[in-house]
Structure formats: structure tokens, C-alpha cells
Image (cartoon, rainbow, N blue to C red; front, top):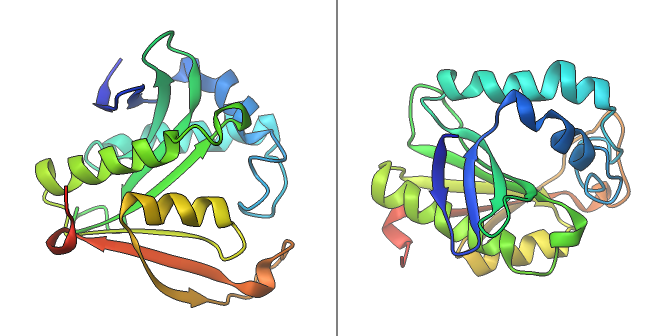
Amino acid sequence: MTVFCATERMVLRRFTPADEAALVTLHGDADVMRFVGNGRPVPGEVVRRETLPAILADYGRLGGLGLFAAESRVDATFLGWFEFRPRDPASRDDVELGYRLHRAQWGRGLATEGARTLLRRGFTDLAVRRVHATTMAVNHASRRVLEKAGLRYVRTVHEDWPEPIAGAEHGDVEYELLRAHWRG
């Protein structure tokens, strides 16, 4: 197991092929996927054939960054994942923050805890200059996580989605935090 970082309640580690079933379950949950992509669960075969292999390949391509499985420190239960991935594979200057947790984990502060830990790791150990995140404007819970983690609203963008989902008409919001403004 390759640990990227740990929080008070979670270990964030690299995914392995053994995580396939857990990832299929997470991405197969309609509530979890409500504000992502086309708003529908991802078929298990797509996760097995495309999603997990891409996650595993990113570690080499992105110098160890990418998506990290979140496990409980108490019993190693799979809680979801966190993303800490550079926009440009050749630079860690600008990194995207993201997260996806099982419904049973919502409302426990885990997303904020993981986001704060990733910010700390990025700004203190990895020479990241900027961390950004996007979510749908109507995804109030995710926006609140970003704000509690210290990111600031930058703008709302409206894109022409091939399969718009409910709330897409309100756009996506971008948040950011610069290392110069971080208050670790």
C-alpha cells in the first residue's frame, strides 16, 4: 500500500487493482454521481475497463499525483476517493482538488478534512502554487466543503453539455486557493 497522506480519520493511498469492486460500488451509486458527468451511475464495466486503469496509469504520468483511495484509519473501510491532480502533467504549479465519498460518509466532515490535508501537503511539501476545484453551482454541499477548506469562489462558467443534467442551467463554479493566501 502506497500512502500519499493521512488525516485524523483517513488514510489516502494509491488505488490498486484490488479496489475494483469498491470503485464500481461508489461510481454505481446514483446519489453519488448526481452532480458528476451525465448525472447517472457509471456502469461497472466502464469502471473496470476505463476508470480504474486510467487512475492507475496517472500515478506514473503525473509524478505520483492523481486519485487516492480514502480508507478509515480504524478499520480500513473504503470511504471514497480524493483527487489531487495537476492540470499540466509536467508541472505541479496548478493542481485540481476533488473528492467523491459514499453516501454513508456524507455529513461527517470527511471531505473537508481530506481537502485541508491535501492543501497542506500540496503547499508545504509539493511546491504547489494554486489549487482549484469546480462543481455545479447547485451542489451546495460541495461548495460548502470547498469554502470550509479555505478555497475562494472565482467565477461561474456556463458550458454547453451534450447531456445537461438538472441544475446545469445555473453553471459550474470554480474555486481556488493560492499558496500565498493559504493559512495552514
